[in-house]
Amino acid sequence: MSEPAPEPYYEQYFAPPPMFQCTDYDGEVRFTEEYDPNTRCVPPSVLGYDLGPYANANTCTWVHESCLRLDDESACIKFREKLKAEKSEAMHASASTAPFHESEVERLTQIVADSCR
View 1: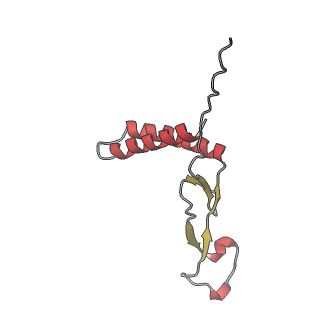
View 2 (view 1 turned 135 degrees about the vertical axis):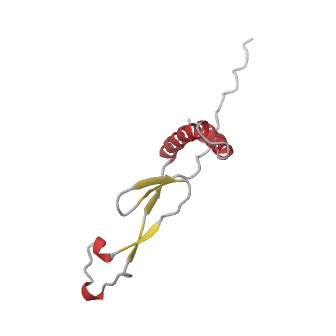
C-alpha cells in the first residue's frame, strides 16, 4: 500500500503597497508611497513663453510633477532599497529618532516578507 501524496505547499504573497515614481519639470525623480505630485510656480520665461510687457514679478505658471505607479516587481525593488537605507539610518540614529527608524525597519521588513519574493 502506498502512502498518499503530500499536500502541495503554497506560499502566499500579497501585492506590495503602492509605490510611485514622480518626475518633476527638471527631470528630477523621487519615489514615494503616497500619490502626491508636487506643484511649483515657475516664471513663464522658464517654460519658453515671452509675455513681454504683460509679465511682472508675480507672474507664474503652475507645473506639476508626473507621478506613475510602479508595477509590483519594481515596487519590491524600491521597498528593498528603502529597507536597506532604513536599517542604516536606524543603526546610526540618535536616541530621539531611533524609535521611528526601528519602526520603519519593522514595517518595511513586513512588506518585503509579505509581498516580495
